[in-house]
Length: 506
Image 1 (spheres, one colour):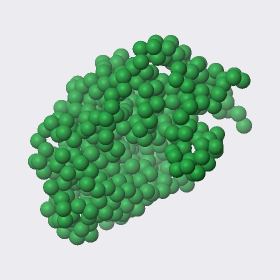
Image 2 (cartoon, one colour):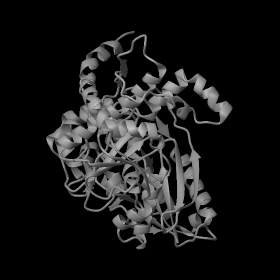
Image 3 (tube, rainbow, N blue to C red):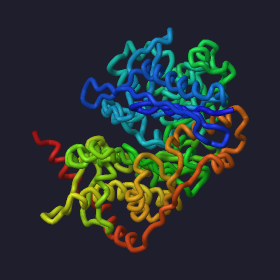
Image 4 (cartoon, rainbow, N blue to C red):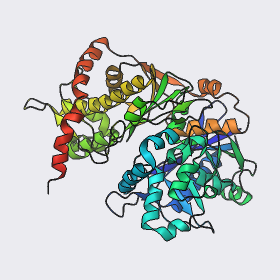
């Protein structure tokens, strides 16, 4: 008996099959294109996403069919993006993904009329263009006939669930990312739905993560080459599934996703909606482990900043990598200095995440001189990204969420040099893990829970999640980084007025 976890991302989807001990048996990946018809518009073709998801499920599941057949499927999904269907289950438009910013006017207008404080207290989230609520309002105001024809609303996780089972069900965890969900009463907010003119009947039913939705439809089972009694579970938001996949099962620990976006995902016991959380734009919503809550502290500029540097200034390393077969990033990091730099990088090269929620900031590199080396700049980029996470870590502590250990995953977690920089700046032990597909692992654990095989996620987490190395902070570096962080923490407010002036230049 094995469990299949699907992870539906913005640029691709993957499926991984795990056995009962958490070992990877097979996997498959499929990439797809983001559509950008106008500046600030970013969309996905939902029909193509479903085709891709079924393809990877069939490929990964087919590899274990005769040796360890799949018993259940769990789904990890990007949040916020949604698909709209008409009465005949036909797609009404492309799905707008999180970083589509066309709904800024709707954010401002709705907060004035509904009240931003009331909205936060109901949903646990601060208003921002990334959330489904404001994208729906944009559609209503710009395409009213399309809006009137909506008969089904799905996030990608429950869209795939609907395709596989014919049942319309979403987890509390994923539903919260729409900003249509009442986190206090675990239901769709009738007050918000009324304010935007949405009937609750178009929304999926609600359930905890790890709930058994049903079995595969007969024709779908045949199409995928799987048994007809394979069950499908409610999963959750990709950051939450990834957190479960690295062993975040209680307070004090946070997952650190080190990829294109950098994100901290902790778990905590109480529903925290205090002024500190709201002022920092830190969300509170149900975690995928029952009776716990979570948040996401994130920076939209992550590994993409190092990629920007490599693509523009790392031609030598790119060419050397092609000749030697080595990784171009490893070559870039090979000779970075051991001690902290005195260069400050404000890593806001895309829209910011928490705490600022600024859709159009600008990054900065400060402290350069004629003696500055290429290697110092590279290390300063890694430091700047981590200073931003430390800023969020301190805001979480101020709000009452104390994180004493971190579990890292993603591409950046493979670099021991980068991991040591991070643990020195954050002054928290960081554990790297054997799992490379944490979102799929978390989703697979929920699949096992849904069919009764996994009764305790905490127990199975200890069995399935395998630490590789614990990085401990260096006392000397911690002190030096503490001094530098005091400077970094002033950068945004100092530079923001200049950035506003720059944006007005023709």
